[in-house]
Amino acid sequence: MLFTGWCSMYFLMTNDVEHHSISLNKEDSNIPFQIYQTGLPRLLDTLNKYDVSSTFYFTGMFAEQCPESVELVHNSGHEVGCHGYDHSPLRAFDSISFDDQVNELKKAKSFLEPLAGNVSSFRAPALRLNDDTILALKKTGFKTDSSVASQRFDGPFTFGSKNKLKWLSAPRKPYTLSYESPTKSGNSGILEIPISAVLIPYIGTTMRICPSLLKFIEKYIFYEAYKTEKPVVFLFHPNECLDYGVKGISTRRSSNLIEYVFADVIRHNLKMRNLGLKSISLLDELLKKAQNYGFEFVTAKEFEQIYRR
Image (cartoon, rainbow, N blue to C red; front, side, top):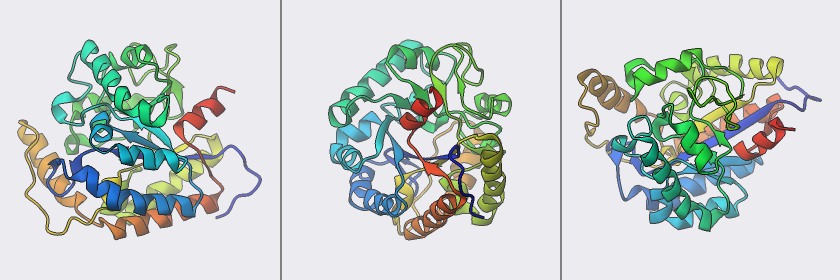
């Protein structure tokens, strides 16, 4: 379906750039080079095909190890955002103190901003944040966050699932964050741009695991955007564009037995589907559909400016 004459439907194509190896289910120092050589060129070519302005949330550690990737994204006209410094589960923002969060953000910016200028958009690693995160973001000069997936439910298939249950009560449309909770509106001045979901998240993993399921929830998400002007926010990872070959042994990242079985074993096996060029083909189809529907592709920074007009 093609809609014309509509100027208030926005699509945010967002990308989390980190060291994570999908095959090994852990951080891998070889991944940044592989993403720079293969993942990013494939992804950037696809974005360019549909004239997509996108936000890339880099970890500071990735920028430190492979600054060429940040420069490539920045020079291609896309926004560089912050994904914390370290994507390790041990440094998740919902498990470290306020002071540690501030230090992680400052450290990440110290590697990102010399390459891409001012960085004002943030997404928490693994979407894990707590009540201290909003003040930490304010203190370090961020203007937007995109870590909450309103009405998304992953159960035990995701780490930090107990805190993420609060997503079920979060506002669906963008809102100014409260200092009390990342799932409540308030007066912090930081704009939350929720990741799209209808219980099931609108992300690259869903797209690859079950393309038909993603298309089903996509129909509702697109219609909702048409009726309410709620922006569509799609989350993707450049490491999904890599060809991993033989599947590695899944690394255990959680001491919790339930999280280990569901998030480290079952979810890992599912996430091995449709990687590499198959992922790019699915993404190409998704972006083409969004373009035909009439969406305007914008970055997180651009949407924040539109929102505050």
